Image (tube, rainbow, N blue to C red; front, side):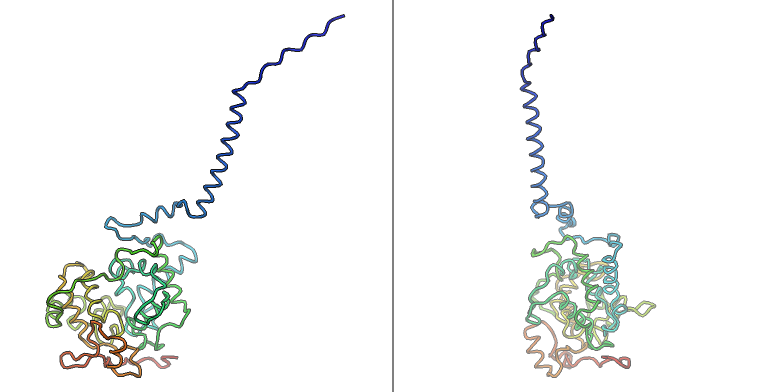
Length: 344
């Protein structure tokens, strides 16, 4: 009878193999935890995403924010609204004609289609609102601000409709969409270089329309005309805007203030050589431009010039309510004839 074979001796467990297995288990667990924590941090904003990183460096070499270019407008419904807003912004008198009383466009003051620093760029304006404005002593939304531009800079009181677009109008919606898009990546609640029109230092000589007349003739008349009434293209649209008279901004516009006009001129004019004028020249030519009559301040309705001056222009660097060259300014230019049904 054959004896049964002895069972082979069991080999001792491979300690290293066990350790390796446990290491892989722990490592996999750590990776899963890291992925989960990373995803949570990403969603919570603790870790910046790629777009945020790109936005943080979206400034030019001289420190100005760089808005997106036109070729970055998306080809979707949002992009269509951006393009409509851009069209209104750059050709307001055509694309919002019923509410424009002087033939001007937003881009006449906000140069480069709202992109140019120290020309009140829209990428800087968008991230400032809502905010309190002393002009009307209340919190203003961006729509409120744009409504004011129609009322004063576009002189909507002389438009076909006799006033700015009504609240909630698509004109506001499209313009705000364009501004929002221009501000893609711009920081909020931070001081941004290039905001507004900047400042121009006061000079010992103050400002003088008489000196400004010489500056105007030498530097501005070539574009705006010797009479300050601007130039139009073959389609009747202003290439260079009128600076006073019935087709210019009214007395309620910010540009009617000499300090505001001086800052804009200093940083942006002449158009081909911004910054060429001295501070003194900027002050003087601003005083000259704003020493002419223009459409009345729409807030003057039912008030005398003096009452309006005390209520809205007290302390302002503005000729409203003053007599210049024997003429009391603020009476306003004659209302241009409007088509039948205006104001309906």
